[in-house]
Amino acid sequence: MAWIKSVEPEEASGELKDQYDQAVGRAGKAFNIVKIQSLNPQTLRASMDLYLATMYAPSGLTRAEREMLGTVVSWANHCFY
Image (cartoon, rainbow, N blue to C red; front, side, top):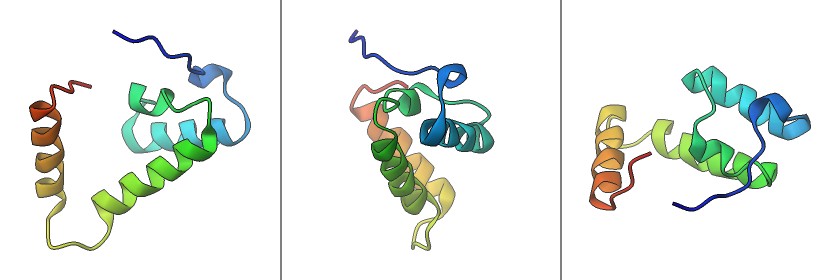
């Protein structure tokens, strides 16, 4: 398993703290997929903007269908996070 330096939520400040606060507001915690991007808060923000647009913007797929697709693709790629 790879080790990647990250900033823990209690150590964050500025834009990173804002991003962590938003993550906690959405999911109750900052998951590793969020923390792994902590060294570049601008990239984290862009990544979260893409995720939110993909999962919540108007679409021919329901929210549940989008979650199911994400789960199936993660499983097929052996990505268990």
